[in-house]
Structure formats: C-alpha cells, structure tokens
Image (tube, rainbow, N blue to C red):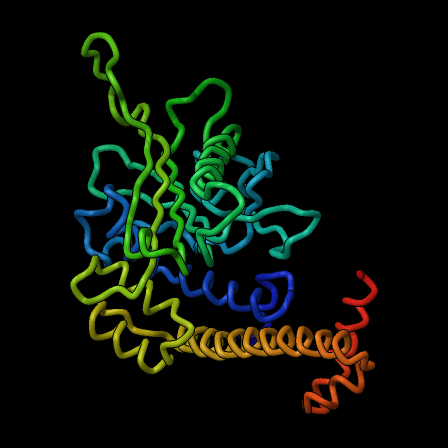
Length: 333
C-alpha cells in the first residue's frame, strides 16, 4: 500500500494541517524514536541503552490513533483471556478501530506497552505519547494530560485486572511533546507524578503501590548540541523547515538513528506540507489586507466592490474569492 494511502487512513482527511499531524505521529511512532524518549524521559528505562529498549522493552507495534480515550468496553484478547494474560490485548494497544475521528471521539495519538527488563518481577508500563502543535489552549493542557493518564488506568479494569485484583494495575505514562511554545517553556522537560507526603508520622508505603501515573511535558525549541539530547532530536525530527537530507545526516551522526525510507518519505511530506501551510498563511494575510483596503475604498469613495478592486490593481486570479469575502462581510453588516 502506498505510503500516502497509509497516512490518509491515519486521519480524517482534513487538509494540510491534518496531513502534517499524521506525519508527526508516524515519525514519533518509530520504535527507535520511542526508545530515545523512554531512555531520556522515563526513569525506569534510564539505565538501559536505546538499542536494548528498542529491541527488548517495547511490546508489539505502537498503535497510532487506534484507541479511543473514552472507550470503556472491554477488549479481550484473541484467545479469550484478559490482557494481563498476554500483552497483546487492548491495553497493549490492541484496539484497532477505524482511525478516523468519528462522532466526536478522541483518540490517543500513540499508545503502546513496555516492559522494564532485568527486574525480579516484570514491570509492565502503558505509554501514551501525544504531539501538540502548541501549548496555547483554552484550558490548562496539564489537566487534559492527567485525564488521559487517568483514563488509561480506568481502562485496565476487566482487561489487565478483574474483580478486586488492584495489585495488577500497571503504571501509565502520558508523554506530551509540545511544539511552538513560548520562551518560558522552550527546551524543558517537566514531570508530574503521584508522591507520598507524611502529614502525621513517618509511615512509608511501598512506592510501587502508589506510583501509578506520571505525566511528562516536553517543550521543544531551537535546541543546541549542549541541551538534553532528546530535545535536539525531537526538534530536528519534527522540523518542517529542516530538509530530509539534513535530518538524515544529523540523526545518523549525532543519535545513531538510521533514517529508513519510510522516515525519509514522512520527513519529505512534512517539509512540503510545512511550506504549503506557510504559503497559505501568507495568502490569508494578503487576502485580509486586500479585504480591508477594498472596504475602506468603497466607503470613502462610494465605489462598487469591482471598482475598488480594479483601483487597487488586485491580480485577476484573486478577485473571485475576494468578491465572495466582501459579500460575506457586507451581509454581516
């Protein structure tokens, strides 16, 4: 299947912005990229090499836009057992609903299961990675991230554990990669987690019994070589300005990441889409300027829309769409 068709299936085809988002998700879902994120941001994987994490810790294939955040129905495994019997169930990312957005349902960008090696008992984690174009939202983004983490815990009922076997609950991580952030957030990594606080006395609970959810917010910027490696890696990888060949050279030289043909194609699509989005923004700004000037001229000199457009020497190919906008503006007034 052609790569463009795969990208198209990942999203509800909604133009260049949506296509750009799909490319970002596909690049981030590469196992070697996820391994770098786990190595640099998740304490449990700090002691291990990126190659070991990629080879031994990431379970199955990461799922892109395949699991609904608010879906409560149990998703049993093929053999009829729950996901605690096999990591291939819903919690491991096994839900394969149609990837497009439908009926307002919201999907995790990327979700997968991971296992911490070399421990007496296997430590299994559920990881969600979200890519966000900006941290400028109408609500505190951290609240949404905590909600996502909470939903991943809630979804383990009847999939990872049944009845009152709460001891089987797996720790969840919701990792948010924020692009186009302000100076105060650029090149930052911040973790929010559950901690123990003694109010009276000094009783100590076993940490693994309450350390069940963490949110990590990664703010990207123009990272330099001296910054935390993951910040520069993600900044280069997700840049719509850096050409694919330049990305390939930096990723291979500085991070030992061989850029596959699929990754190069995604990077190329991102670069082209980025240029297209910027061109659209410039066009939109120009249209708004023309609209303002035409309306002012019509009012001050009592001209028709066509006369004002001709007086301003607006290009012929731009006139039909501009006339439509003028009609809409006058209709509102």
